[in-house]
Image 1 (cartoon, each protein chain N blue to C red):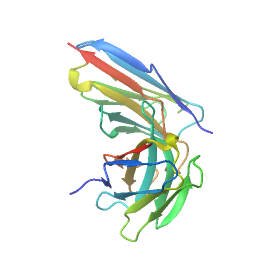
Image 2 (spheres, rainbow over the protein chains, first blue to last red; image 1 turned 120 degrees about the vertical axis):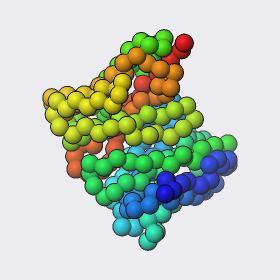
Image 3 (cartoon, chains in turn orange, yellow; image 1 turned 90 degrees about the vertical axis):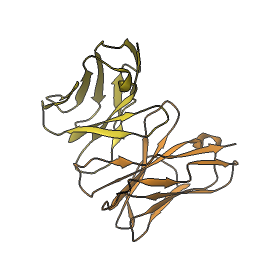
Length: 113
Length: 111
């Protein structure tokens, strides 16, 4: 049983460019959340997808958008990249219950130069 | 917005010593989860606490949830080098499943 998989593992982009990160949830999970983790910080909630809709959103600008597909996989898109967007982007999947643990992928390390 | 703070930020112990990290939320939580992140790795779920005053143990790890459901602690007895990593608490403010992570405590264990 595969866990949460993310691609790519590493990415280097130039300021102003756009990036798409991908996530496949753990088998059986229907909810996907995205987090941004800057170096030395805790993960910061970006948004959560359930039934192909954005259900909750953290304090991130509209440059951050996402999508969930019918097979529950998800994408995170970031437009007009800034140097400050450099971080580890984590995807977490779970069941649609409030009291359930989140399973994290290994993350995508994004560097903006 | 909700804030979750942890202390200390960093602790360095000798193997065999005990370690405790404390987690405090600005708002009441419906539950709290603890995660461990090894250097270069991703957060891995350790445990979830739901009830006020709840105490749970996992071998050398003891987790507590405060009576007011605004604070929590993780205590490790007789640390080992395999305990190295950053420990995060993550709170759920209500029945919504938006986890707010704490600032983390980085644990270093040396022989």
